[in-house]
Length: 420
Image 1 (cartoon, rainbow, N blue to C red):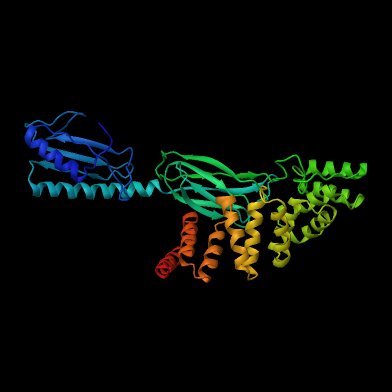
Image 2: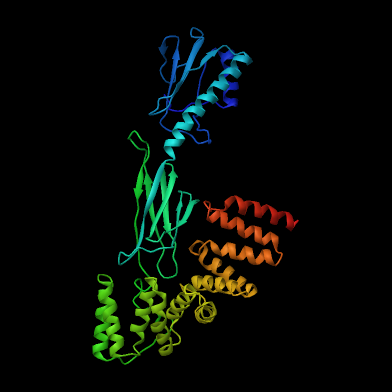
């Protein structure tokens, strides 16, 4: 017999009418949870008098009474219902009982089915945790179910998930390459009904995914480098993946031998930015750009470091150079995002708006959802209320678990009212 049963009103009415005309009954339907989801693996039995009827068998006139039994897994909440004749009063009673039973069963199952967790840690390729990265979980249809940032030690967590297939995606911050993993949570055979899936990420940086050194893309830059400096640099690059401190020492050694060694300066500064050591990164990146002013990745890394250190006027100059030089480069969307945010914070909303819009256009969900809050602020202050409301709606769509969700929804209503 099918493992589904809860009769919608239309199905019940059809059942009664056909039963009285043809003297034969057929019961079919779906068991729903209180949230409207179909519930799998629920046993349904049909009994006549004192015995069970086999699946698919018609109930003849000799069996005017039958019971529909819905049994929930694990907790085994059971409800029985008697089907008598076809009076409207009896029909309404049956309908109410079915609804109550499905709610009882559905609530217990829904609780068990939404108690799963996906959690993990995001590392770089050197197994160092990466803080403050956006992580999102999506369903099979690519619809976002949740979004969060990694904490100070790179951890993230999504709870209250059902069983099924999910996609967990770590967004790029402009330094590290985004990554997505597929996760399947199967129904648990245990008594608790909840599962925890640990999914860790190891992100490569853009420099590790290309054969060119950071800062060298876009324009060929050649130098006559002394052999000892070149040897130290190459050894340092090799060591970075297994011994970060040793690799950084070798890069520093190469710079000591040849202070104008562009590749060594760019890589040394880039690795410092990756590690969140923004202040020490300023000097080597500045020197690298003195040697090669067209190093686009060095411009990007320096602009990010200046932004994080709240040196906003300097950051806007550096990042403006970068996006003007390489408007379609892989780092351009993130450069525009940081540039736009710096312009907002320095009181230049008119200049910030096109940069933020272009950042989202180029990067989409790679770009932090804060871009929508910044654009909403710009549009709201300039009395473009419709556009401000639209940006806040996009923010909530991309950040469904936002802390101030109710306040933002109320603000959207106010902005919509003002736009009329």
